[in-house]
Amino acid sequence: MAVELASMVERYGTSAALAVGGAGIGVLFGFFAQRSRFCLRAAVIEFWHGKFGEKLSVWLLAFSTALVAVQALILAGGLDVGNARQLANRGSLSGALAGGLLFGAGMIMTRGCASRLLVLSANGNLRALLSGLVFAVTAQAALSGSLAPLRLAVAGWWTVEGGASRDLLALLGAGRLAGLAFGLAWMAVAVFFSLRSGNRPWMWVGGVGSGLAVALAWWFTYAVSQASFDVVQIQGLTFSGPSAEWLMRVLASPAPAFGFDAGMLPGVFAGSFIGALVGREFKVEGFKDGYSMARYIAGAMAMGFGSMLAGGCAVGAGMTGGAIFALTAWLTLLGMWGGAGLMERWLAEPVQTAQPPTQQAPVVTPVAP
Image (cartoon, rainbow, N blue to C red; front, side):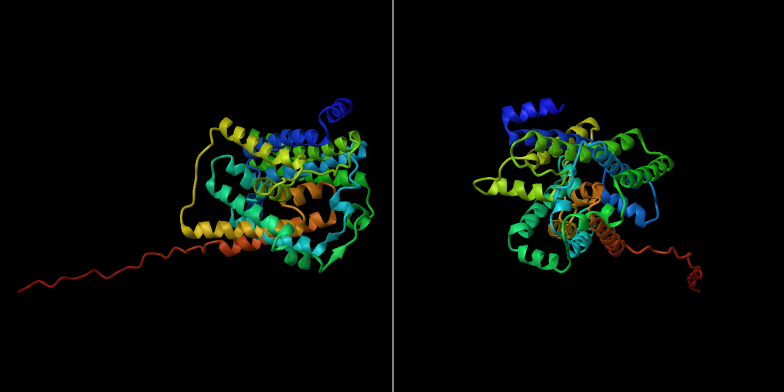
């Protein structure tokens, strides 16, 4: 496989190889995520309502699969994440927590995280399409636009150096074998809840497939970096940066250079579209009223800014960064669960307690003499 990849890089160039690989992995993730209804928002809602059902078990399957697969690749020598930006670069703990809270609250308002919005857009959901566009605009504004100063200010409150200080396993004095054991424990929990909730076959296949796609992205970009003479940043799946990149690709000239992200985003869209056709679930949907539209837009803005502040979205920081035990990724994930839980409780409609019917005295109609 390494020989074929090296030949592909030599023949077509590093950028083309990354874009093609990104598209292929994106198709896999989009298809599996669509068929399994993979969604962090739905999992969080089940968790906070004390209902450990199908949605939570699917997310746990995907997360634990990514964790186990990535740690197994590292132990086998097929992956080195030492130069990954989530570990090597200086990070922000304040940005991870604040960004996670904002992102979690936003995904409740938009009824889906960044990856879920893209998946739903390919299924004909116009609400998700508009929310995704607002998300991309806000992410770009937070990256290098009008919101960048605010992002940098919040991120500078509490920072941590790159290297061992951002590696959760190193901080705990544990090795990669312990990381694999931890992932297997998570997988056992995922299997338990999946069996208890009676997951349908697609839930099992889709959950595991979504997690494997995350690990595959790490492996592929690392393999290209080893086969290429160019400097290649190894990475996993994420949706905040690529969304902002595609926005600039459409609006700016010259467009950003092609790479893994350029192929991954349309690949996920295509994979989800195929999944919708297979399941006969393609359906054009819009907004019900003005209030819901305003809520979706506000939520997308919160997610866009939060993802850039935290350094990733629910998949990029939560699963991709979590799978390599990046400290900031786990803090972001914790913030997302907390922010989503608080927003879900705030938006929840109060339960109306049924009152027993009152006994009314019969009405007596006077009779004329």
